[in-house]
Length: 400
Image 1 (cartoon, rainbow, N blue to C red):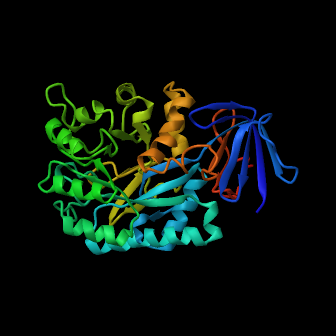
Image 2: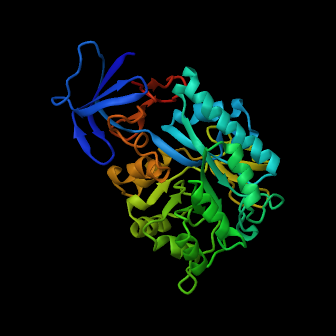
Image 3: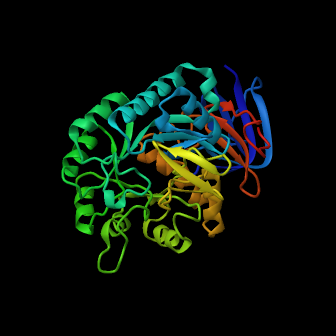
């Protein structure tokens, strides 16, 4: 197993800044990181010099439906291979495959496919150069029809322990996040069951009042799906679920920072209230990500993408074509420092999933998911679990 020594001008772990760093990578893991004068590099190591560049952890996307013309709900290895190969070239080295409301059979097929793909990742060397799937984010069907967004009302269902247990079984222990509307009858019992199974409960597609949302948080909900979108609006006398999320320090908030889903002043309010540790940047990417305008599938529904914006026939936003490197630049454009934005893409989502020991940070023992950023914070190279990403897939990338 070869040892790689990567030298750069600085590294953001993202907690700490290291000047003149070297990162030692062996196989899929980081074995050491520190200042060059502090790390002994064996003579046998393959030295990779990248002066002028910054090393940061790979991005972790906890809410993504598809890319490259494919959707998670297709329930096929082909779809998951295409999605993971497309987004890794834009810096996403790990993701949680996200469903959309559909029939029980279609959802089970998709969830089973994700579990199968995760087993494949462990056994196949060809999967190392793509984004790693970390589990399933079940978005729907236990949502409020009044806030369904792009979800088909045909498949929305009342919270059901029996249905959820079926999905848990299909996931084979890989269920990571459950999005639901906490105000629905039966939601409290489902929250308790999900937490018992180790699943993060997220408030989303909800018309919950402040009191209903706070009750769910007290019951174990700790996350909020694409905050502001598909939620009861915030007003000064009816703060609703948004008010509960903004004022609950232990609840993390997803943000789609594409300049379409959330206006910049609302982004500033969210960051001011939650602080960088409380925000997680997500793509909510669909099959159209990385593709030209046209018609695409989101689950079983058809959406149209015009100028990169996806909408249903009703005119509702239907996910996005955002990639996380663009989300990074959107927040940088608002004047948020790189050191504050990076955790929202790396350590925050990894911590939400309980995987911060191996994802979202540069530390000994963590997976070797590394990005190189140039002086303009553009991607200049991607390493996924110790494997250099094929530069033909990483457009405009200078590479390692």
